[in-house]
Image (cartoon, rainbow, N blue to C red; front, side, top):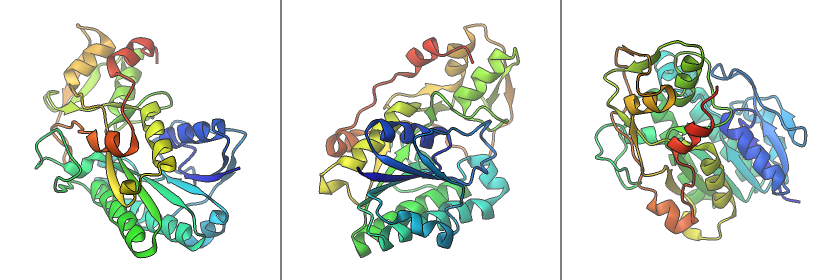
Length: 304
């Protein structure tokens, strides 16, 4: 039986990866310190083993990598605005944490590491749709630290032969998405506000656009990255997005109806104006393409 580690495996994306791995017959160990303030709750599968430790602490996690075939590194301080408020925590969690995971994987000869990263690497200087060959335009400590993780993955592949693959996610949504606080991802935030009869809070003018990617498509990308035999994938970065974007006002109307109750709040620092993925590289090398469309999912799940 193959053995996998999922860091951050009690959170939104990580818990879905855990469930899929167990379904696929993996022996799964989750490393998660369960301190993320963005989650209303954490998610546990009784078929997995859970280790309540921080990836920042190399000495406390290193032994768990012995005999592991693949690591899915999802753990992170994962929100833009909190990273502006606490850049030191973000840097330690995302950069030091990623280096700890990579070094532990290297020491114990793990076959592969799949790294969860972010489309916020593209910032505002690039013209959408975004391709992996574009320059980085990091606008926040969060994006800086996640891109640093990508570069560490590339270096560990080139220096040590550790097969790494970095997946840049575009606005992930879906079941178990965080709903807590004013910085919750916008799909879940709007659903929460709408269900409570509160106005949906739109940042800025609401004409900014986002490429929304369902968590099941993200999970599939991780599985394909973990199992590909295409050597062109190793040490590389891949966009994981749909190639379709929606402005935030349109999203609000999808969730709340054409006459929905909305209110506008001031723009925030560090946020991209428009995002949309070119996922041709992931399609060509990993055989990945998105399956879930946002409007269809909202129709079926608009009862939060």
